[in-house]
Length: 130
Image (cartoon, rainbow, N blue to C red; front, side, top):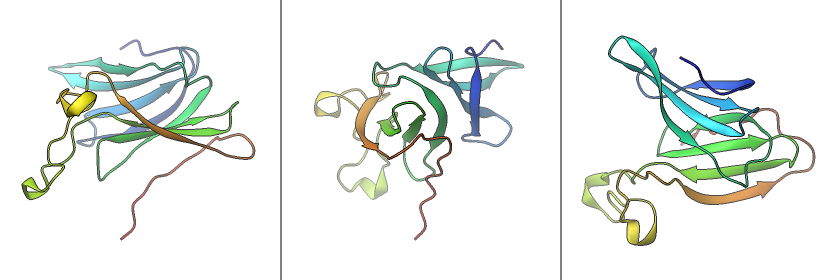
């Protein structure tokens, strides 16, 4: 599969050995790669003007959130890329992206905010420890 230019980060997502999320620094993009039949394909891509120099991405284990580390700006940027969990049908169960949560597939990822840090971001880990 031809992913973006200058891949600087890769993390496993979903089922082991079936899909990864990668950072294309050259294209300023985040891409989800997965197995489609017997070929590896780009299944989704996140491009946003706030992402200027991405070098690392981490996919949250507990929800449909990705955090992007932007080297030059020294920022962490969060995006919701899927509907909220069902959670026993407790609100906000299955809430999609966009106005009123209408986009159930979250075709357009929802920007969740940013955190500016002193210095350059080169690694992140978003493990949730209870």
